[in-house]
Amino acid sequence: MKKRLVIIILTALFTGIFPACAQNTTSPDPKAFLDKLGNPVPVQQSENMVDLSIRSVTKSGNDYIIDYNAGNSIISGNSGNRLYLMTQVFFIDPENFENIYQPFTIDDGKISVTLEAGDIIEYPVRRIKFEPPSKIMYMYFTGIEKSVSDDLYTVPLFFIIILGDNPHVYEQTPRHAGDLFDMYINEL
Image (cartoon, rainbow, N blue to C red):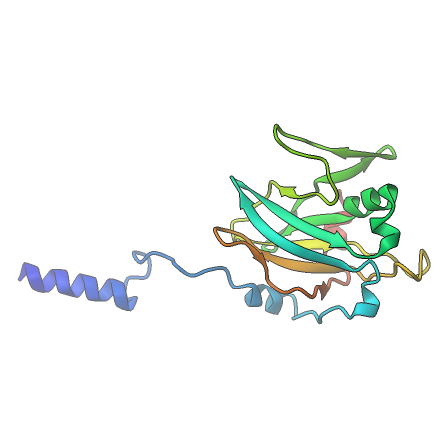
């Protein structure tokens, strides 16, 4: 009888009859987060004149190294422009848009960043001390309007970054952010 009971319990665990007892081994589903946002369309090259991209995402202790880049020489060739771009990048929890991490800020016209032992100031910011419970985060760029510069015109856009043991960017091409995050960013 005991042997039969053990077999029934094991069968139930493996078939999902007792899902609360089964271990969750699924990875985050970025497509589900895109669907919740109404599946925003990819940004065209002509809408990303800053040429913002993510080269790589790696784990570093409890943090992540996000190697993002602006390929436009107007940004990359000028330290003031690079710093400004960095203040317009936010990391957002896809399940709670109020949970925002902004490594570089402008306070009273001056760039501000909080450093920890071992951190290095370099362009762009690389160490991200932010991991939402979903193991997914958005890297959001506020954009640059055409009225500011035709050469730098970039729509508000975001990338989906998958965290955990094998972190990576979900898609190399960013998606349109529109005004999805405006209310939360403007409150900062």
